[in-house]
Structure formats: C-alpha cells, structure tokens
Amino acid sequence: MAILASPTFGLTPSSEQVPLQTNYITNFNFLTQYLPDTYEKEFERYGNRTVASFLRMVGAEMPSNSDMIKWAEQGRLHTKYTNCVPAAAAASSTSVFTITDATITSGNTISIRLGQTVMIFDNATGLSNKGIVIVAPAGAGPTYTITVAYYETGGQTFAAASTCSIWVYGSEFKKGTNGMQGSLEAEDTIFSNSPIIIKDKYAVNGSDMAQIGWVEVTTENGATGYLWYLKSEHETRLRFEDYLETAMVEAIPAGAGSGVATQVTFTSAGNKGSEGIFYVVNDRGNVWGGGNPTSLSDWDTVISRLDKQGAIEENVVFVNRDFGFDIDDMLAAQNSYGVGGTSYGLFDNDKDMALNLGFTGFRRGYDFYKTDWKYLNDPTMRGGMPTGAIASGNITGLLVPAGSTNVYDQVMGKNAKRPFLHVRYRASEAEDRRYKTWMTGSAGGAQTSDLDAMEVNFLSERAVCTLGANNFVLFRYGV
Image 1 (cartoon, rainbow, N blue to C red):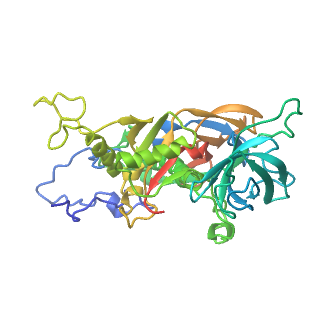
Image 2 (cartoon, helix red, strand yellow):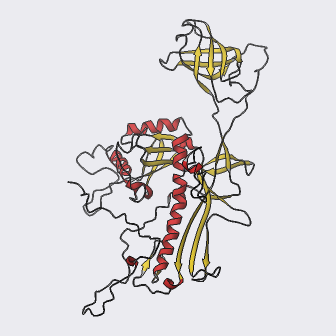
Image 3 (tube, helix red, strand yellow):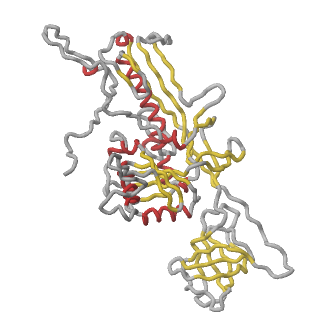
C-alpha cells in the first residue's frame, strides 16, 4: 500500500491581492436559534511555513557600494596540460610535442621551461615516460611546441599523434651551469557578480483597517492580533524575507538576446539577473547527476572529486527528505547486526526507549554533517517538483564546505577571509539597502500622501558570492 493521491496536501495560497468575501465571516443571520461555537484563534495547520534558513546557517552578510562585486581566487600551484600530441614514433629517444592551450593570454606562453623534468602519459592507454625539456616552448597560441628527451633507454612508449598529458615534477642541471631561464607569474581567476533589487508591498485601505476581525491571528515571527490586515502585513514581510534567500539560491544571469534582456513590455522589470548558488555550482563546481548517492562507493566517487579540489575537511550536506533517508539507510547498512534487526548505532535498545533511526553525519575521508533543507521539501517550492529518473535537473541536495577562505577583495584592495557563501548588500553612510521598509499613504500612522490607505514597502539590493565553487557539490537528477 502507499499514500493515496487524494486527498493531497493543499497548495492554495493564503495570500490574495484584494479582499474577497472569503476573507470575512458572511453568516450574519441572527434569526438562527443556535449560533455555532467558534474557536477564537486560527489553527496553524502547516506549522512554520517559512523556508529561509540556509544562508543564515552557512553564510554572512556584509556591505558593498558598487553595482559589481569582484574577487580573485587562487589558481592551481602546479600546471598540467592534457592536450599534448607527440610528433615522434614509439621508441624514439626525443620528441616534439604540440601543446594546445587556448586560455593563455596574448603575449604569454605555457609554464614549461628549459631543464625541467616532466611526466608524460597517454590519456587513452596510460603508457608513460619521463623526460627533460631540451627546447624551450615556441609558438604564439593557442598551440605551442616543446622538445623532450626521454630518460628511458627504450624511448617513447606510446605512438605518434597520441593525445597525452604532461606535468612538471622537477628539474635537472649540470654542474657549473647558469640558473633557470624565465620565471612564472601567479595567475588568479577573477569572478564577479551583480546585485539585484528585490521588492514587495502590502496595502490596505483605511476603512478596512477599522474593521474588527473575528479570529485571532498569529504568524511565524510571533506577531498576534485581531485585525485581519495585521496578519497579511506580517505574512508579506515573512514572504519577502524568504525571497531574500530563495532569490540568492535560484538567480541566474540574463543571457545575451534572452527574453529578459530584450523585453520592453514592463520597463521596470530587471534585465540582468544575478549568479545564484545553484547556477554557480552547476557551472563551475561539482555536479552529481545520478539523483542521490546511496552507497559508500557512490560517496567514494564524491570524495575522490573533493580530493582533486580544495580538500576541505568539514562539509555540510543540505538535503531533501528522500536524500536524508538514503544517507540514513546507507549508514545503517554498515552495521553487521543491522540485517533483520535495529541494533545499529549507539543504542541500548531499551524497550521504553524511542529508537533513533537517523544519523546526523559521518566521516569517510572528510567529515560530512547532514541537515534537512526545508526549501527542497516544501511542496510550494522545489519539494513539489517531479522526482526520479524522469526529473532531469531536479536538485536533491547541496554540499557546502564549512569555514572560510582567503580571497583578494578588489574593493578593499587586500586579501581578506570570507565565508565560502556570503551575501553582499548595497550600503553607504547615507543609504543602507540591506532590508528597507517604509510606510506611505494616510492610514495606519502614515501621513505621506492623500491616499486613503496604508502601503508597507519592502526593498533589498543584494547578491550572493559563492567563493571556491570547486569545493561545492550539487546533487541532482540528469546529466
């Protein structure tokens, strides 16, 4: 048996743009002999409905005063070239290699120098040689050539025109010779992001503000009252606070020629977008495309990738409910007594004790701490998307490295420690746009215009900075 499709969970929004008859009690028939008993306070059947919490746990907020946020991240200390083609045949004692690298800026050359010793291997077969560079790199890009002499008596082990990889492991010079020719400059990778302006508003006319409500209302932030508009104002505020986070998670930049970049229908609409967390990790981070890793071998694959990246010791995995259960089941299966029983974990199995079937984390090479992400479970958000193999692109979890990293902040002009995830908001001495709220109109205490209403306005201008995206892992379905 399974949970039936009907009745299902409700998706009808509790917010409306205008007052409707469903907002009020309409049964005013006082000729009825028996009046119904009513509960004074509404029942909170959906519990805490907000989804914001992710960035509060892993990030920080700091001001910025520009339309563009830029930072520099370290490049690799060592360089490996993966598109190298030898001209010589197998068994040759020397060979000219053509190396293709389109990323080198004009006027520069590859970072291999005369006298350096190199490791070379065939990408397809794994056959390898070690040699020394005897002719310096030549070429103007994107292709360069070097000449290598092999140490092995048998010469080159792979065939001509094979696709090889080359990296430097040292150097060797004769006695009494000059030093190394040329030097290398550190090359940083520059990233940037642009803040977006997020707005919302709640409005109620003065006459309706004077109407006493029939039900005591409450909201997630603890506000209570009997005026019906008070609940709507607080829910608008809570909804806006959720948007401050979900916009940072989901935002994508507007592509050149896209509908957003070229639209003229609503001229106040933004036309540039921003780089949200999912977009950045999907673009330059690590992506697990098979849904949820459900076995230790799956996690070993993830760990192997982390070894090749920043190798951050502690990581937090934010998961949806199914992913959380998969991790629990995987860890439970590691107990040799778990088959047919429930003895796994540090439990005494006392008959009066509630059995804990969940895990908060595990260590395998690195520390992984598991926590549920409500945003991925909420049916009005990503929790309502299709799951399984057909759900290409549906995200089930995100691995976030804990701690902070050193970057060069171009605004500050110096190296600074920053959390891997943090939000930059527009602010100066005269204007702080982190979280602005103000009232307009002529009701509810506002006296700014002749409009017989109170309007509560919300505004924020912010962007999320995902530093070291190569240390993040996005778990989703689809390639």
